[in-house]
Image (cartoon, rainbow, N blue to C red; front, side):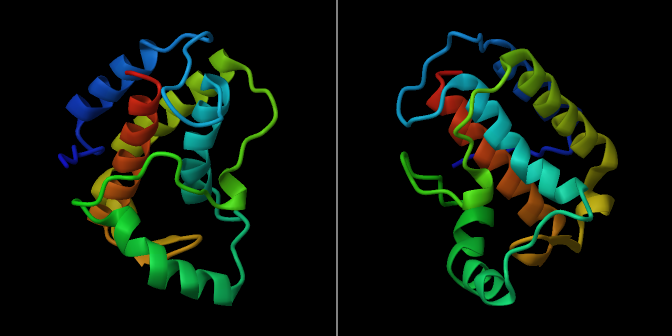
Length: 153
């Protein structure tokens, strides 16, 4: 699996181009979310990263997430599986405004690039504890790539 650098303007441009190919009518190749829900779902990781008051799982749940999932979600070799489960905070079941969610996600991607590796290096994740900039990069890029691929872009 090729992981691009989300802190690089070229990657921001590439992700922006992929997202801009989506329309409110784009349908998934697998899964239950519609395109607006998917965009909102992708923003949750950024919401958690940027909001210092983001709700954290209990200590035991964080320990289990770190032990069982962190490595798979943040390494550069393991792609996300189709139809895999998601944490409750990431479940989006209500209808979402496509344009609003698209703008929000694009803003998060641009903010991430602007803040850069120094901001994310050793930054605390709500579920996984402190992570390196490389782990944040892999987490964000793999998640976006998985869902953009899900919607054919």
